[in-house]
Image 1 (cartoon, one colour):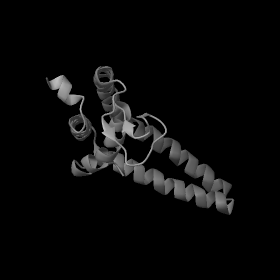
Image 2 (cartoon, rainbow, N blue to C red; image 1 turned 180 degrees about the vertical axis):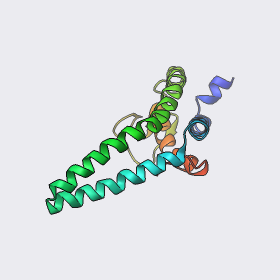
Image 3 (cartoon, rainbow, N blue to C red; image 1 turned 180 degrees about the horizontal axis):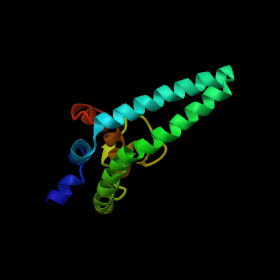
Image 4 (cartoon, rainbow, N blue to C red; image 1 turned 90 degrees about the vertical axis):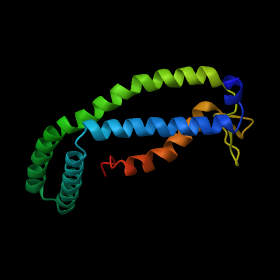
Amino acid sequence: MIEELLLKIPYSTFFILFLAFVLAFITSYLQRKFVNIEEVKKFRSQMDELRKQMFEARKKGDKKALAKLQKKQTQLMRDSSKVMGQQTKISLITMFPFLILFWILYGFFGNTPVAFSPVPIPYGTVGGVGLTFWLWYFLAAMAINLPVTRALKTQPY
C-alpha cells in the first residue's frame, strides 16, 4: 500500500523533498553540535585576508613580503587543520549512513520518474522530463541545504 503510493507522483516528489530536508537538518545539526563554527569563520576570514595580501605582494613584485606571507600562510594552515578536521569527521560520520539510505532508496525507486521537470533535461531523466530519484534528490538537496544551514547558523562563510 505505502510502497505503491510512494511510487506515484506527487507523493514520491514530496517524500524525497522531505527526505532531503531531514538529511540537511541532521547534517547541519551535527555540524552545529560538534564544530566550532566561529573558529571556522575566523580562519576563513584570516585566509581571505592573507590571499589578498599575497595577491598585492605578487602584483608589486615584493618577494620579501611574499616570503613572509607564505610563512604566515603555512602557520595559519597548520592551526586551521584541527578545526577543518572537525568538519571532515562530521562528513565521514554522516556519509556512510546516507550512502546506505541512498542505495536502499535507489533500489526502491530505480528509474521510475519521481518528479517532472518543466524543461527537458538530457541526463537522469525518463523521456527528458521525468526526473529519476537520484536527480530529484540532488536538485532538492541543493535547494534545501542553504536555507537549512542559514537557519541553524552553520554556514561558515
